[in-house]
Amino acid sequence: MLFNTYEPGKFAFSQESIDLYDSNKTVDDLNKGSVDEFRKSKKWGIIGVPFDSTCSYHHGSRYAPTLIREASFGFEQYNCEFDRLLDGEFYDCGDLNVVHGNCMKTCEILDDSVKELIGSNIKPIIIGGEHSVSLGSISALASLEDSNDLSDITVIHLDAHRDIIDEYIGEKYSHASIMKRVYDLNPKELIQIGIRSFSIEEKEFVENKENISSFYAKNIRDHNDNGSLSEQVKTFEDLLSKIDSIEGKVYISIDMDVFDPSIAPSVGNPTPNGLSYRDLQSIFESLSFNEKIDIIGFDLVELASDRLGDVTAVLAAKIIYDFLTLFS
Image (cartoon, rainbow, N blue to C red; front, side, top):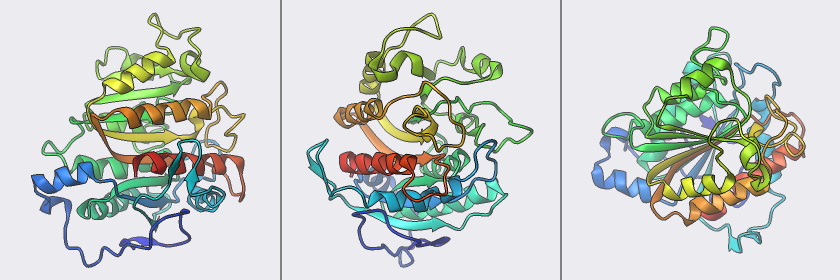
């Protein structure tokens, strides 16, 4: 069990609790060999972050960690879609003690907890909560780098929205500005997938950024290559080629509103014409085939519901289940 967490339940098939109190390692104590060991680690630690204080539309993502864990028990340990057992080493470390109404403080606490995991060569899986909480996990991983930023890390962001405006209603730390805070950490590349809603300010911001790649939902949905929001159409096949070209460390952030509301209605900001789950599974498989990358962190955010058995919660649990099947 991590400092600053408690244990409301466990994700299905997780290992017995790991107690890190006896480990005095911090990120600062890790040498190059230890950092390389972390990068290659297949161990994962789940942290729930029940925080939704900057939500602008549909509240309820604070309940998501509990709902997703409950839904995870509907799956078999044998994942027939990938013909693999979910028998890798992963731990459910409980929920963060968040500070409701204080995004910055919550992210600082999450940063500390993720650093505890890193010290034991355990990679983070964050279950939000709203999208702003991604910053706590990503900043902890940035602190592991010699440059203290993301210049050697590719961020893959699946979302209906760009989330790259500098401020939203006067707030710099918001679910709507999370990717701007990530971009401030100088990522090697930011790959945005499933985009179909953004402001003119966001459009102008990304236009001439060589390290931001955009794959619009209308071009890749259900592997469809018709239509374009730009002069250069980027199809689903282009996306898979892009994934195959990535090298080095990768962080994945999934906002549940990347999916069409017909399959994921209970999200913070539902937006029509989203992706199917088949699209995400193809992306996961493509990532698993790329031997040039090391996925060092993952978050899933913006499920907004207070009902056990919610279909969106089941989908979210399936995403984590498939991710762990392929990468643990």
